Length: 208
Image 1 (tube, helix red, strand yellow):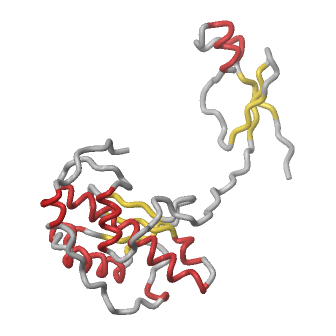
Image 2 (tube, one colour; image 1 turned 45 degrees about the vertical axis):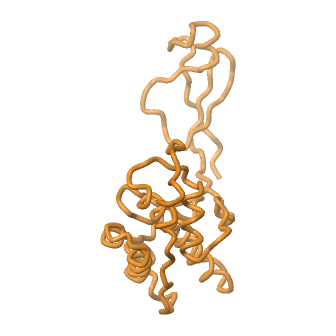
Image 3 (tube, rainbow, N blue to C red; image 1 turned 30 degrees about the horizontal axis):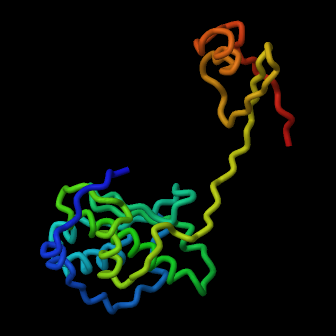
């Protein structure tokens, strides 16, 4: 996470407060792809950036849908001007879907705007610069965290390993590729170093 750094001086920050006129075109839900680059949102992000006089960001910004995201609604990669949105946003109830997509998109765009304005200086991810960017993008008072309750995927653990010394069991999603030993026994009897006496032995888990 970026470390906190110096804030803009009052006069310098004031020069950056100009707010863009939000795009007026409506984006039909069918325009959003299931994955990959979202041309409509990328175009709008560039319009916002140009309105804020951030020409480099306008040329660089890209919005994509990432089906691999689990718990986060969106992420911003300021180094490359990229916004990633969780495809599960498109599966929300119809009455809230459009609003949540828009707010998540603007939340992440505010990160790109605040870092572009910082010009290489370190800032807090949700500090005053980000809050100002949210204001400029039309979402004043935006929370630093998304409120969507995306639950992580639960992966079934297929493998189990038992310590012959203490009897403790370790369950894993994937099979161990090399010898492993019970950490607690190694810590207690061998200063935390691997000891073959405490090697974990595979056992079968009940199926079903």
